[in-house]
Length: 255
Ligand SMILES: [Zn+2]
Image 1 (spheres, rainbow, N blue to C red):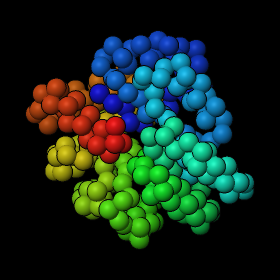
Image 2 (cartoon, protein in one colour):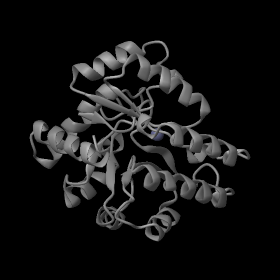
Image 3 (cartoon, rainbow, N blue to C red):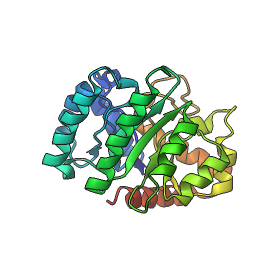
């Protein structure tokens, strides 16, 4: 299995990261993709990848919740890092729009998003996209930039069936994690409609742990619980879920 979105560099793992990675590997997680959020996470991610080069892949991007007054300088700096060594990263992420915490800077968020989407085209990389309370402006950005070259994962997908279908038509994939297993979630209905062809698995650790770990710190080994849940509810073997979602991830991340 491939955990396509996991913040293992989070300080929530600083005491036991070796155990966390060992547990993930023991349940069959072969790769863990780490999204960047800001300058601090980048340093920690790079250190972790040096220690686990076979398991850890990195993304580079500025998170929408970290768009501050100096965002242009940060993106200029990431621009140089991309230019220097594009093969160091599997994706542009974590980028996106978040109007839950702050609606006032939506213009800046959209400018930052568009600048970062340019890296996807320039370096032939997928995006890992965060969307919270922002489906309308997000769909506008993606429609305006629709092209066969632009591809990515809508991480922690929570949109409607209609949005899911439009994204799939554009060639994008949906990142499915712990939220799917929550009792009040409608997401499983969306997944049963669209099927597995554009689904990748993710934990978004340390956030949003799946049932039966809900409320605890999430970790990449819980990817197994997500796959198990999907296999039970959708009526496939867990092997089938693992195989299809891993193939999808390898396809979108060109691995
Ligand atoms: Zn994230």
